[in-house]
Amino acid sequence: MSLREHTIDRREFVAKLIAQLPDALIVTGLGSASYDVFAAGDRPENFYLWGAMGGSTSLALGLALAQPDKSVVVITGDGEQLMGIGSLATVGAKQPANLTIVVLDNGHFGETGMQQSHSSLGTDLVAVAKGCSIEDAFHVGDVADTAKIAERANARAGTVFAQVAITAAEPPRALPPRDGVYVKNRFREALGFKPF
Image 1 (cartoon, rainbow, N blue to C red):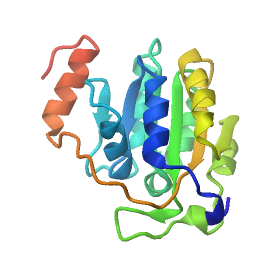
Image 2: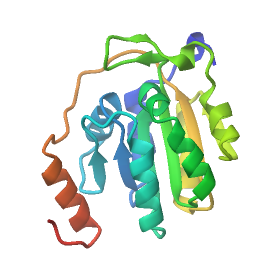
Image 3: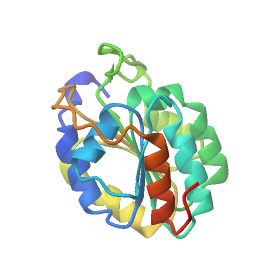
């Protein structure tokens, strides 16, 4: 995927995707993914990660295994997924039917100064996912493809990986809660567990 193909407005894409996933548990990667999910509408079923670069897919995998009757969607960036690339091998080994991984790929490390990421230097994350036995892995180049992702996520019929070619534009930041205990406790309550 070349940089000239990165044409999707990430904030619009995330908002349209989340609107089609009313019952999904959503885990975000740090930075822009968290801002976009929060801008689409804060809710207790959103778990925002702060300072855990590379951890979103692993956290979502654990959640998917623990909550098999819920759709779990991780929304993260290319840099964050690259840092946690090994998590894809574990996802492929476990094959949770209710896990969807959405990578917002602008080809840059947005949180550290917009340096080019490996995805703009030749790494094809879809090929990596397929190499890790995630067969339903595909590139997304159009906002209309939110329907394809949402349909798969809601069906909970297999692990899904979508690499979304977003622009490198930076919309205004919409900051979700940064209190980790608060986010954790309200997420637990949304799942019917007591806070601790």
